[in-house]
Image 1 (cartoon, rainbow, N blue to C red):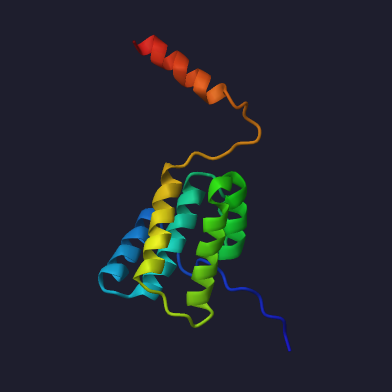
Image 2: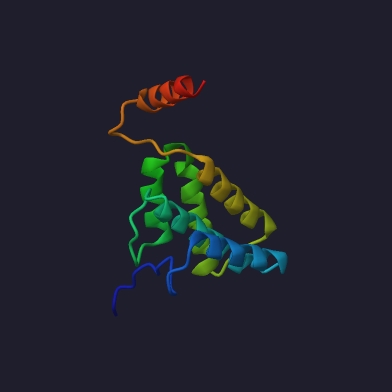
Length: 139
């Protein structure tokens, strides 16, 4: 017997978050919920990589991506873990996704796009101060 490892999140040529989202939406429009969920999770992770919130790392699992993303987006950590479980259940556990599971993932993806990360090394007020001084200069 050989130990098995968790399968990887991405298994094809690198695609952009936008390409994964488009594929996800096309699957959803056809009612192919398993594929829609899988592609939306890939879009979510690729988006975080494109924003440099996650390092690009081939072979990363959904669980690893959720744990890493939860550290920089702590307000979404639980939803990220749930999304990873959904992806794993559908991809490897033989579970069937449904429209609700797809919409939960799509909502999380949209919420993450609007969320700013929690950066441990930046002072809490620095962004607000910079924004205020730029606004004052423009007025």
